[in-house]
Image (tube, rainbow, N blue to C red; front, side):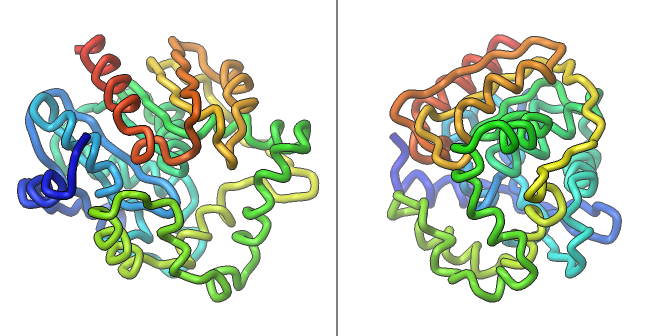
Length: 286
């Protein structure tokens, strides 16, 4: 199990870099060499939220951990429309281009998983394979909300996040509610202080289905790249029922691992299991 000393040592080894995505600077950390792996964080997180995975894999792969726009050291556009998923996919592509990479394995959690799914659908040539934590396929979200009252209750917080002034009423101290690792807590708090709460909620305003109809007329090209979905059986936000609905949107190989006694923040709270599954997945694909 990585320790606080490991975290300090790791941060000292990381390259701090930035790619230009349109008019937006996207910050990311890089380390290692070998087959490339890109990490995309969710809410409320940042690039170093993946430190336990980076520590585990750094000797065998080229690892890139992105601060998504609005977060930490990346730019924070003011307009809500700048957080539409297409721009988030463009940010990923910009980092790949900046690194001179044709493709990479893309690993995403929560909103990072949403972006990873979208990238696999819209720029499949840039996604060697896909690993998603705690996020069913985007096409499964609206049907799940319409058909499953339990999922609607679990997503009640989104109604607040989508309200125009939510970022003015949400206590920023709560952005660290999920952090259990004392060594990471101060780093996380500092990163959240550099982030835009409005931008975080704009992800929900621009991309998440709205009540009461939860209409979704988006086009979802079938996912053809190999995909691994890791989900916690006790996830309180994205209920496991959405995992079942994901199969209908994936035409390629899909592996699913439901982790028992696991919630939403798998990369931190269940890092040993996640690291093992990641290592097995990457090794099997060269």
